[in-house]
Image (tube, rainbow, N blue to C red; front, side, top):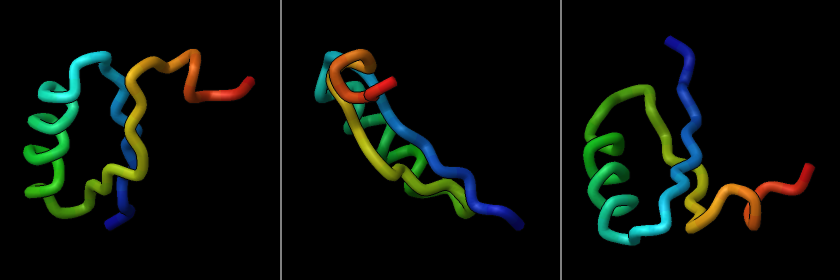
Amino acid sequence: MDKINVVLADDHVLVRDGIKALLEDQSGIEVIDEAPMVLRHWKY
């Protein structure tokens, strides 16, 4: 099974932490990064 890489982006730390905890319990999903705002984090 292929691994799914996830980047969490939300301005609330508690929301990111909660979603990260839920996702880390799932096999095949890895949270590779977090950001408070997408536009500040990603360079395009």
